[in-house]
Image (cartoon, rainbow, N blue to C red; front, side):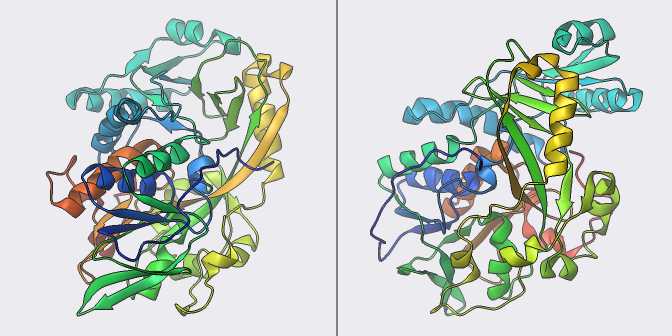
Length: 441
């Protein structure tokens, strides 16, 4: 079964003009469109498939500050507040709640790293609690195991990946924006060196502002415009189990497996960082820039197959604007599940939490997690094409920080005071080496 996803009815007729067009209906794209619409802009959001159907519905649902890279932490903190405010502003339900995130470990090195992060977090006003062996063992009693220690971040939480992006899309419609599914953006019109329109499969929308929140498709889209955006994806597989396990932590991480309570009472199970690398032309193109990332992560990655070539999201092809593009041939990236990873994840989860033996696997799915060379997203206006704003490469963090990223994008468009310092995210940094800059996550 694929990842669960709530469907949303959207706008059938494409507008001829808009103040801004958002390309991509994942969590970052919908929040960007939402915050622009709240400021009174006429906004159109175009999505080649379904709202939230790719990685925005295929993740764990964690909205965390804990262990964030220093560059992303301010946006993480702001995003938690925005998740809460969104529900109040719209009466739409994303499933967000501050349930706290709980980590357990028997590794002295891992615990030392968490303690160092705790000290850093204190300096920027973020609360996280290191747990002694007795505290960790008591709080983690569902494991039936003694632990050396742990950490609990009480203000962090989770949202529902199946509900979140569709809920924001409905809020956009309430504000007078338009949302278009099965409407791929093929490219951009440019006049006098500045963006003048977005060309879609159903017609052109005249606009001076376009935001590319295209997830794993962003780099190949940029290539059509002569913009070099280094991006590579890995294939991650996770599963869910049915309700019936009783009282377990809402969100628990260990090095062996991570477990998250779902809205239906079941749980999502995953192994942090474990993934397959499906070779693509784009990966070969950017291989040198990703060497620092690979050197940091290689223990968690394994070779994949040729599915990445077939999917077309990391193609080096050029396409015409008057003919179907790779996005129309692959409306939704739904890669093959890695059965070995699913079996290992399930076995580890049953060993960690024996109560899960009362449940059954209800679904398993895979998704392409797109990354930048340093593991921090690229957000900012492209200097060579005024009016074109990139927001991609969220490196597995986009769901949790989606509200903050969307707010920052709206700030950039409208010239308002940015919600966080935008400089660490600007795509210009990809012109330099990522050695020594790869995010810890």
